[in-house]
Image 1 (tube, one colour):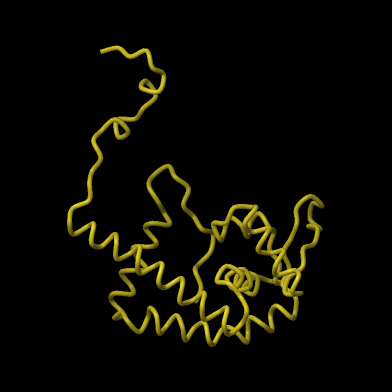
Image 2 (image 1 turned 90 degrees about the horizontal axis):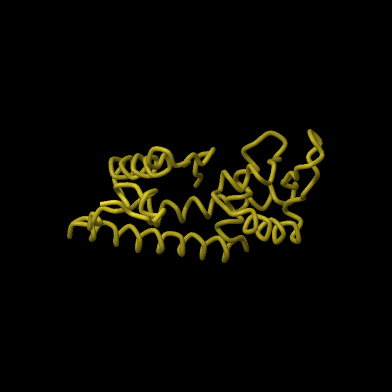
Length: 177
């Protein structure tokens, strides 16, 4: 059968195929993942906000900056590493900047880019916040799993990061606790 629709002509066989519905067991695991990750993120955010006045996203930005020489990363690279939109990163960095935790500076290498630089105040806050955050990560995740379960979780998430063939999935950095 010949189609006059250009959408059909460009469609992949997968797009035209019936969906591969989840099995009952897969559905249970999928929903457990969704609920578990939501509860984990909520618990970690609640702890950080209560003890350090930071959101999980703000904390992760400070962690990433603390891990590089000069505590400086180009904004576009930071957005890519965190899988944030440029707009989301800009808003989050603006909040951190208002608190004196980071500064934005023109990239000296080419003058076009903008770097995000962690201040000493930002580093001090991160250093003070890290012990409570690690305790929360342990209480809400690590201490609930065996070492083997945690390793499987890490391997599974690494496969998700790699993604399907042809889709960029490199996060350019390791998740932190």
